[in-house]
Image (cartoon, rainbow, N blue to C red; front, side, top):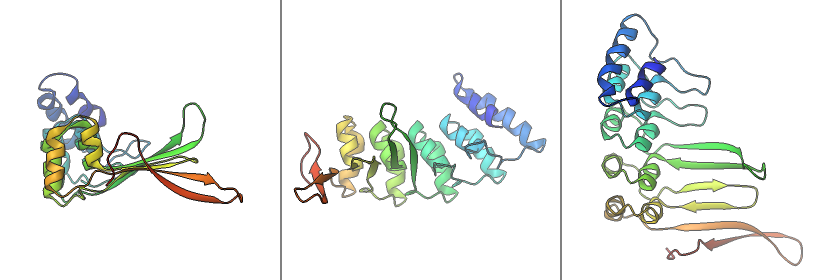
Length: 212
C-alpha cells in the first residue's frame, strides 16, 4: 500500500493510477493501518504525495486520520507540507487535530549535539507558502500563534508562523495569519554564564526582527 500511494507523486495524474492500485490492494485485504518501521501509514504517504483519491480510499477502509509516527508526525502534517488542501480537508473532516505538533529529534551534523525541532501543520504552511491549507487549518481552530521550537544544548529558538511566512515572502499566508490575530515573534534563549558561575536564561530577539 505504501509503495502504491507513493506512486501517485511519480507522474502527472498519478493519483488516478495509484488510486486504482490502492483500491485493488484494499479489496484483496491489505491493511489500511499497516505501518513502516518509523510508524508511518499509507495515509501518511498518500498525503505526502498530495493524492486525495488514495487518501479517501484509505480513510474509507478505516485508516486513522490522526495516526502519529514515531516523531509524532501525522498525515495532516504531510498534507500541509505538500500543500494539498484536498488531503487536508479529508483529514479534518475525519477529525484530525488541526493543532497537533510533531518533534524531530536527532544530532547536529557537525557537532553531534542532540537537537530537536517541533512544528505544527500551520507552521509548515507558513514556511512553505501554502495559503489554501493555512486557511483550512485556521478555520478549524489551529492556533495562529503556536510557535516552532528548535532546541539544542546551547539554545532554544521560538518562532511564530507569522515570522516564518514573512521571512519566506509568503504574503498570502501572512495576511491570513494577521487576520486571525497572529503576532510576529522570534526569540532566542541562551544560557549565560554570570560572574558568580550561575546560569541565567536570557531571551534575545533574533536579528532583523521586530519586537512583539
